[in-house]
Each structure stands twice: as structure tokens, then as C-alpha cells.
Image 1 (cartoon, one colour):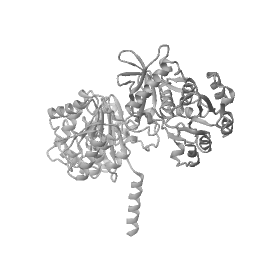
Image 2 (tube, rainbow, N blue to C red):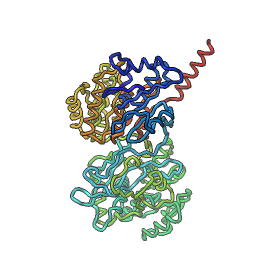
Image 3 (tube, rainbow, N blue to C red):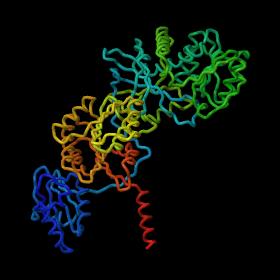
Image 4 (cartoon, rainbow, N blue to C red):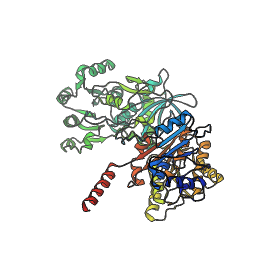
Length: 626
């Protein structure tokens, strides 16, 4: 039995000759008999973590299979007494590693798992207070309203209803930034909620009517008495187009998919009669429409059909007609259209459902004024909607994309809206808040620039890199310049000077001045021999974070600091240590870091089966050559 004395512990201590317990340990181990056991007992946790400490010691010494490790880490200091039953049990079980902590006896066991291709873990991106607006409801819209069930639906622009700081109910249009997980309200396309409207009603209106006015008035310049053909009249934009076209005095013709949709449209619009409503399941709407208009065709066609239905819709245009294409599917598939239709002197417009955000301020104001006038004149009215307080975003988008759907999808925001759920493209992607700051500690110039780029691509705008390595190579400085200019990111390089408590406090305060600290990343060092000052620096930074930014995520890529991070995690502070086997590079870890962090575990060891197989093949080749 050898007791470790001291306030600190690392596997490097075992090569020192000035520690009495180390000399006792070496001498005892050398003279140990095969059936004997040597117990190394400690009351402190190693800097590199218990598992790493045990592994390092076993590699350093012969007869390591006779070693047993006991860590007494209980808050109440205990000493090993083999006369007590609890310690007799430990000796009887003969485990290589035993840990006593918080009154519990246990050991460490690695659990293998695989990086997931699709994970449902949602990151800590949440919030219903956006640009001084307390969001109450959001309405979902598709990125592409093409009638094509084979295409995977994606989230498009977002409607919202909210209450501002003056307690005034408002509604508006916003886009969802998938890279930064931010809902970004448009400062122009917003309106006061009319009297008598509920907030859930308001959350289904803005986008549909804004796009409808933009298409019919700004693009198509529709006039009274003109024939207007509107496909998929039960979609949000389609329904709004019918309302606006009828208010202008147009002859409106629509298509629907199901008998239920037809009944719904005829019920909502008493000025529409049965012969004005066609089915878009087949292309029969073309001859029926041309017959109803006595061959004159349409002044305006609002289309979201694809394939042969798209071609049939083109043939429905009259002389000098305007064709508004809302769907993107045909364009993405490099679909073609003949020039014959242009002999009628028609105009063709493709209006992306997100293009309204790229319009000039004057165009947006024009649309905002048109919608406001429509509200005042009672042209803008509620859409049929369903409200959800618990939801599966993929299921809602799938329902919204269903050809027979007549229901707008509105989500109630009770407290914090989990923004990560709105990203159906990459649900494991780590989120960075552009208002928060991020600290990178250590690493060489290439690794900390890689880390900074990883953060910037996930929405970070404020980054401080505290490293002794400053970029010298031209390719690295160009990368840094591009990140700053193209992404408008503020990336500051600061010399790593946190070797005292005061300097660590100064570093954390400097980061905090940029914004609340969201995460700290401790990068792998190139030092062959870890310095005591490096250990102290990490301890000082950890202590400052606990007081200045207790919710900040601490991500550690250095095995030597695993013990510090383990203590931090056990104290309830968000922490993750990432280790990897030889043959894997730090850049490889960054490629999978989104998935790694999505597990929300405090310690992960990454292996690569391909590397293991490569090592196995190399060993086999060596054996064959011998």
C-alpha cells in the first residue's frame, strides 16, 4: 500500500526522484511477487483525469498488471483502513481502479457509440425575445411551394405575431438563418395587429398577403376586368391572391387538388362559381379555362405547378399576359420551355418565395403599404390554421407540403422557442449566438484559425484567440482576413498570458467586454512537456469562468487537463473533454465536432475503425515479411 502525498497529482510525478512516495512506489513495485498486489492510494484527482493517469502509469512500469488504484475523493476526507468492511470489499473484488466519491463506490467504464448521421438533440439555441419583440406565435411556410410530393419540404420564411416593449400586438415577416439559428425579423415588413384579431390569427397572415401583393401588383400589374388563373388556391399565397384579385374586380379562376378544397374555396368566396374552380390533378384545366374565357386566355397566371402542368399553364396565357412562377422545382431540374409562348408578347417572372427579403427598401415599403391598405379595406382576412404547442417540425412541413392541405401551421411559443428544431437540414449543427463572445485558448496558429473558422461558420461574430502562436504564413493571414471581411467577424489575437490569477481575470474580462461568454475552447498544445504554468493557467481560467460566465460551455481538447474538467463537470458547470486515438488529427475532430457535442457528455474518446484496420493490416504485413 503506497499513499500519495501532496495537493496535486500527475503521471509526470512518477519520474521525479525528489518525492518520497514515488521512491517507495518504485522500490515496492520492483520487488513485487506475481501473486501480490500494490495499491496506490490518493486523495486528489490527477490533472489528466483518473483514467488517463492510470493508463499512463501502466505504460511506464513493468509489472503494471499487479497495480491497483484507489482514489478517495469523498468530500469528507477518509483514509484507507483494511479493517473496515467497505475496504475489505474493495480488496476482495480486486478491481484495477476503484473510486470513492460522494459516499459511492465505483469505477470507470468506457461505453462505445457511433457518431450519428441524424440526431434529434437540440442545442441550447432558444429564445422568444427577438429584436425587442416578445414572440407569441410563429407561422410556418415552405421554401418551395411547387406541387411536387417527391421533393423534401424545407422551411421558408416565417410569420410571427408578438408583443413589443410598449405592449402593442404586432405581426410581421422574418427569415430563419440556418447557419446561426437566428430568427431575423424584417424591419419594414411588419404591421400592427388589427382590432379584433387574435395573435394566433395574425401569425398566419403576413407572408401570404405580402407575397400575393408583391406578385399581383408589383410584378404582374393586374388590372380590373382581367382574367386571372391562380393555381393551388388553398395554399396561403394562393388564398391571398384570390382575395386580392377579387377585390380589384378581376375574373378569377382557380385550381385545387381535392373535392374538399373545392368545397372550402366555394364556401369562402361566394363570387366564385363551380365553373371557375378546376382540378390540377390532371391537365384538363387548360381546355376548360380557355373555353370559359372564349380563347382569350389569362392576363395573369400565378403558377406553382411543375412538369407538363407547368407547360399547360403557359398555354393558358393570353396576349401580353404575365406569368408568375412561384415554384423552384422545374428550375432546379433545369426544365425547359419553348419560345412559342413568347410570340404572344408575354412576360415571365420567377418569384422566389424568399426573394421578398432581397427587395429594395422602396419595394418593401410598397408591399407593406399595400398590405396595410388591404387590412384597412378588409381585403386581408384570416387564413384557416391549426395551432400547436408541441410539435415535430418535419411532420408539420410534410403536412404543409401535402397537396390536399388547407390548414396553415402555427406554433405557440409559451416560453423559449427551441430554434434548433426549425433547422431540418442539419439538426446536430452547433449554434453560435452572434451577440455572444467565444474564447479560444492555446493551440498553434493553424489550429486556432481552424477553430475560429468553425465558430464563424456557425454564426459567431466575436472571437478572441489567446495563443502564443501568431499567424505568420501568408495563407493563414489570408484566411483570417477573409473571415473578418466576408463574415463581418471580429477575431482578435491576444498573447496567452494567463499565468497568474490577475492575468486570467484580465483575459476573461476582455472577452466579456465583447459580449456574454458562450463557450471556451482549450486547444491541443505542441509542448512536448507540459509546464506547471500551463496547468495553473487553465485552473485560473476555470475559476474565473465559474464566477463571470457560469453557463459557458468549456470544451477541452487536451488530455492533460481532463481531471480539471472532470471536477468542473461534477460541480455542475457545462464541460466536455474530447480525446482521440493516435492517427486522428485535430482537423478530423473538427469535422465531427457538431455530432460530438450533440451527445452532451462530459468526456468523449474518439476512435476510427479505418485507422484500427490500417494498423491491423500493417502488423499482418510485418508478420508475413518475417
